[in-house]
Image (tube, rainbow, N blue to C red):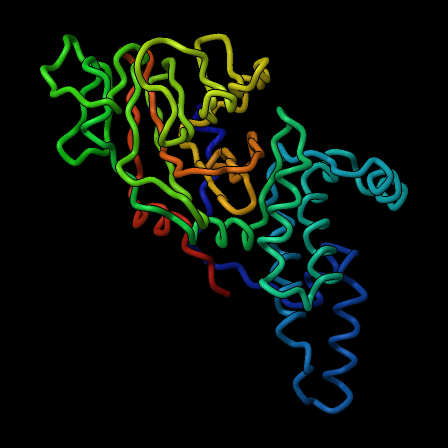
Length: 328
C-alpha cells in the first residue's frame, strides 16, 4: 500500500462552536439553532444534551470521511445533489449520514446502535465496494480485540515462526517438526492457537512485501492434509491474494479489486450473527463479509504463499493504542 493511502488521525483535538459547525455544514443548521434557542430561554441543561453532543461529534466526523466510501442510496444522492452538494462530497458523507439517521430513529434500541448497524450493513454491502465505518462503530468493533498467536503444532514444515509466535514466513528449507494431525502438509498454512465457538473477536495482521497470501478462518474439523479447495463448503472462509488477483475464496471465487488489498488487515468474527468480515484497518473500510451458520469452533488461519510474504499478528494493545478516541 502506498504511503499516501494511509490516513493518520491527528492527535491534536479540534474544537468548533455550534455556529461554526452549522455554517460549514448546513445540514446541522436546524439542530444548532434549536440548541441556541433553548440556551437563551432559561440557561438550563437540555435533557437530550448527551444525544445532541453525539450528533455534533458525528458532524465533525463528516469532514474526515474517506473518499473511498460508496453512495448507499441513489435517491438520497439525487436529493442532496439538488441541494447543491457535489457528487464527490456525497461519496464522502453518505455512509456517516446514514449512520446518524439510524441512530436518531433507533435511539432506544437495546444493545446500542453500533452492533445493529454493523450486522445489517455487512450483510448487504456489495463485494468490491469499500465502505467507510463510522468511528463509533469501529471503536465498538475493535473492543473485541483478541490476543491471537500461532499454534506451533499446525504450521507447514516450510513455514518458520518467530519465537513469540506472532510472525510467520516461508523458510529456505524444511524444519524438523513433530507430526500432528492438525499440521498442514501440502498447503503452507498455520492456525491460531485459540479457537472460538461464541462471541465477537477481532484481530489484525500486517502483511508485508506484496507477496502471495491467504488469511481468514477455518473449522476445527476441516482438512489439513493434502491439497483441496479452500471454501466455506470445505470449512474455510478466506481471502486470497496473488500478484495480479485478489478474491474471496467462495465457490466460484468472488473477484475483488486489487485496490482493496490492505497492508494492515482486520478480521472480525461475530459467531452468533454468522459473519466473518475483512477490513482495511488503516482506512477503516470494509472489504468483504462471509455469512453463514457456524456449528463448531473456528480458528484463525494464515498462509504466506511465497518467500516474500511476511505475516505479523498485531497485539491487542497496539490495536487499541492506534485507535485511541480523540477528545474534545
